[in-house]
Length: 197
Length: 274
Image (cartoon, rainbow over all chains, first blue to last red; front, side, top):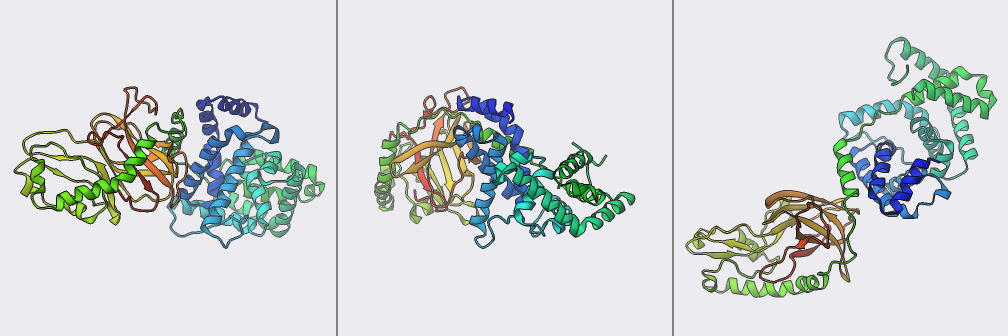
């Protein structure tokens, strides 16, 4: 539990709006990124992010620290908001399966992100949406298993096992290929990675 | 944290959970490295961040109900009757002579095409003497109806300050209300209230402080997301001098002819009917 978050939430409950401002500064980029991974449209991600923080502001009094962290709470709001968005926009798609790489009407930046992600999608799309979401939250958002469990529902141990199972399945499918690709990209300096120091 | 650090942590977790990962660690490590490093480089628009922050942290010291809601309810519902009376006066020949030497006339609001045409007509024929022109006006962008709530004044001999007014086109669902233009004789705000069967509800959005004069294209970001069919009420307020909106301290702009606060209801997705 992030005690600092909890203190800020308590200050919000006492009407100190600036405390919510600190929480906002702390989570705005994370929540936006989390939503962007699921929508890949900047305007849509901004709209949903705005909706998430308005909901969080209005419902901050209902947050119960005994049920989880503020982080997990606001990620859950974001996840549900994305599901609501797809429910209203695309009634025929599976609600949980919001890993959608549309390519039309994109900006250059969006295309770059999608191109990079398309490679990962080749690996990830073979997984059930739940396992895929766990991998994204663990590897990209660097959330703890406990927080992930709170966001998507389930137990910490169950989330760990699901992550382990997903990696094992991916390794069996493309493990040698992943190693070859990694070595090739490293040798040709075409490594698309960041922070690979 | 670097990709390598993340990979190390993940691999330790995986091996602790399932020792078989140690057998082909290189493959698993390569996979985790690829997955981690392919994280898209997503940047967030700083302007969006700042605007959303400002909207969220706007002072929320508003009472639940405007003290003027009952007066405004009558203004809204009696408006069509008043507008019809004015329309009849305008359409009757020579009626405008009655208003000669007046600087303003009591005007109610109407969506009728005849009034729009009157507002758009060449006024040169009436410039010989002070006269009155009626709101609303038309001319919204992209074919949307734009209605204004105002008292418009014309005079060739007397220089009058522009009256307080605002214009509103058909609003699309979203997170903001777009005010086509607002004219204030003193610094103030456009304030959006929720609106329902019981009348005007809480404030849900306040424009940035508007200087005196006319400002075109004023967004009012809301604390809620609007949907087609939602009803809201827009009103003008003068700032009390401190530059921060507060419903109890700032002053509603009063229609000088009707003696009631200046404001009107509208519905998301539907052209304003006033």
